[in-house]
Length: 278
Image 1 (cartoon, helix red, strand yellow):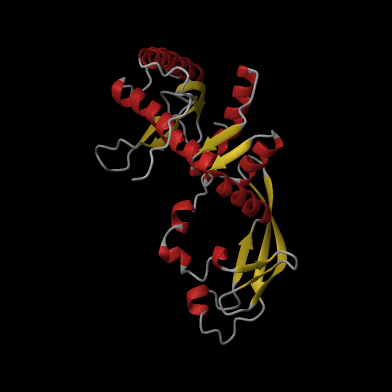
Image 2 (cartoon, rainbow, N blue to C red):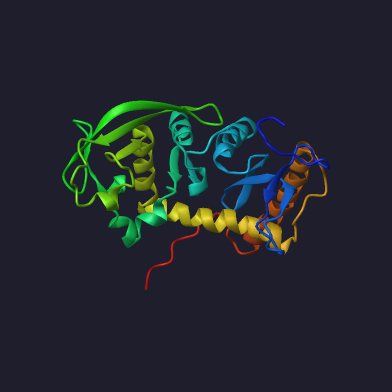
């Protein structure tokens, strides 16, 4: 079972997962695979079949497999927030690839509630030279200890614990922390730094274009496979057989895509252009 905590008797390679198409609305678990695709110029260029329920752990093996099969690596890697992790950021930088990963808190950052929340680290001032944060009441949160964490994949990260020097008699404490003592905060400096870089990347004009195209091309491909092709379940069992089945399906998708782009004289178009704002 590897590191899984469930498997199906009819397909030992599969893991029980909640389906998006839950018509009974009872949260029923079904044996399934986490299917991943990589898309370039609207063509599926990579396929991965995983037993992990979340997407974070699939990015690195997916890219390693593509590099091995294709013989090259892509400079720009665009992914949704489900793939954001310190390990993934460092992997991409080590392989000289530019990450355009949407932060998991990206949508929250836009909201007024988040911007006005004094408990959030993002809303505190940070002195990088002396390594301390300043809270809403102008009191320092200084580093007090280091925690080392190991992820499910074996990646080890370092987390710094910051603690306010004194929260006594602070009129804002009730809005800042539920702790009886001083406010404490755990920060992975590496993760924060890499997230800031990725945020800057996705908010450039080119980054916005790539992010929109990820949504159009990747989600669009899945939409065609599931809706137009009516592909809702695998006919085979076992990870290798399932992968072969899905690769054949993607071959057909790519042939149809080539035909469509040829008919519409779009074979040289790799990215959809951004529509001007009225």
